[in-house]
Length: 370
Image (tube, rainbow, N blue to C red):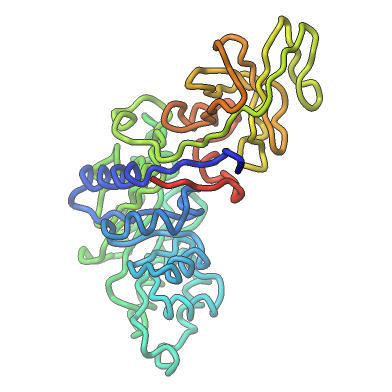
């Protein structure tokens, strides 16, 4: 029989979460962000699931965009990191991609491709998203660079005139952090000083801002993690009850043993029993995407009941103390995170975030869709 470690993906929950984004921002167009294999949920499956609902998809790198085109996805695709070479600019023309532009170097690459070249003349003009830095200090043009870019692209017939000016929040998930308001002020100041026409489209909101800062739900929003149903904020929020988890990471008990006080479990003897205990071995490990750094006590659901991780996470296995949860037998179902155990809670025990867990589920783990 095949190994029962799998990621069970609810496509209907992904659709529900996307429709929630639409309901919260009905005046905006909402790009479905499906980078990083749709945050571990399966790039092609999620794209096909949402294709009839969305105006566009967002991916990080050009390989992801080409994978979608080769899978038959014809919707608009925004390349969030833009291009890194002249070859990628030409591929963007060929595959009709929208490009984020976040540096003068990228502008030079785009300007270096002559649209009058016969090989490119048959393709549509490029649609650019000019990204400005409002405080994230990761990617983005400053005010003077934006002004220069706007002047340059006016002279290029191979660049469309329906471009977008965008930015990205650094702390929108932190309720009560004023940095988001400061970024909005910087964004508006840059638009004003750069004399950005009111006819130019704007984009700022990620998932957290879309839900919690409606004044920046502009022409385009970019919902990402909310599509997959993880809680968005560092505190309780009404959206916690509206979003539906899309992934349940599951496995099974493959061995059971009794250990006595003083017996240790796993590599490095990282946990030692202080009483008679029953230990279940689960068929999952860090090669599958279960976090190596998960601490003793990390919750694991066995037959729907909370048990505790004990001992070091191995490449293919973990061990769980099931002493207190009643009868457990080999083959019993285990939920590592999902509908009944939030990925964010497991992540907190592992010194990371829920994004890391869902996006990190390994390629050897089958995705099962319903």
